[in-house]
Length: 271
Image 1 (tube, rainbow, N blue to C red):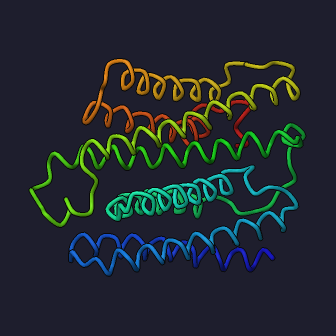
Image 2: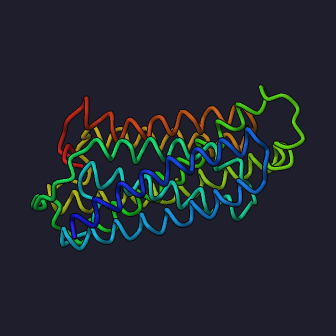
């Protein structure tokens, strides 16, 4: 089972690299056929990635989301799924060209982690694991899409007038609306992540909140996105200003996931 998972991991990693190449070729050569092939490839790689995670779960005898390798792989999976949904829903192939490098970087980070299967720590042996971590994965995937959309918005002002790009990108108002929806989805699931984490923490450690570095940076991330939503709804912030918030928010997400574990060890250091 583990050998099959390792083989699939190499195939998935290669698939994401090819996906990025196809999307870049679509932009460079301006051939719509390449976008269609990229969409099919992304769907196929997502399916293989799902099978890989299922095999990992069977081999480990638990949900495959309890260490750096597993969470990074699930993070990449969520980015792939969320971006695919937005590409299909809004017929937005340019999103794939910006999302593919982020997905590849995340699965590349997973490749650098240990893939050994270990027994769960006592604190992780809880039914809350599935709710807490799965909502975090979905929220991170949604925020990843909003980050990509923010980069697109910031890059759009520097792009030369190009009928091909205009044809395959939504109008600025629509782009802003898509980013708003992705942030809203991410906020919903991040809120659920923090609530389930607090309940779980009380059961495991006897306290709903302990100002652990990961808890603190999750709160910082939540506040950044809450400010984004407040300014958009109350002050009608759009365009470049909103895009900067989306980018800053995702930087907080990455620091919460990777930076805290690297520089600020705490009771969440295993995750």
